[in-house]
Amino acid sequence: MVKDLSSLEKKIDYTFKDKKLLALALTRKTYAFEASSPIEYNERLEFLGDSILNFVTAEKLYKTNTFFAEGELTRRRALLVNNNILAKKAKNLKLGSYMRIGKGEQKQKGNQNPSNLANCLEAIFGAIYLDSNLNITKKIILKILFDEI
Image (cartoon, rainbow, N blue to C red; front, side, top):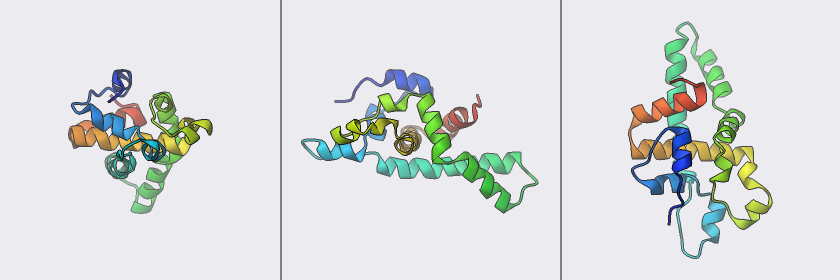
């Protein structure tokens, strides 16, 4: 059963057609391993979201910094797309309160761990892409990471 995530959808300004994709993006491996029957967890979505995030950031840098060489573009992308920045954006969205984590990880406050928060945000980007398309995902990434409307 999928928990009501409409408040999170409002925060990210996207309503999922397939609500299970958002729930999956918020499901950590520790939660999945404690489930009574096998369930998926967010690592594959995280992989996809990370790739899309890197592409969107690279494209933005390419278009807005026409005189920068490849090395400088790469350096700037690394500054923009890192766990600290992503975790900060995830905290702004209060993602930790929506994450599904295992009991052991709950005791260790895993829903506040910057790496877990960053990974969850990447998984959400992957889920949005699968639920919609690249253009919509791009708009949401730019809005969340770069405060563009």
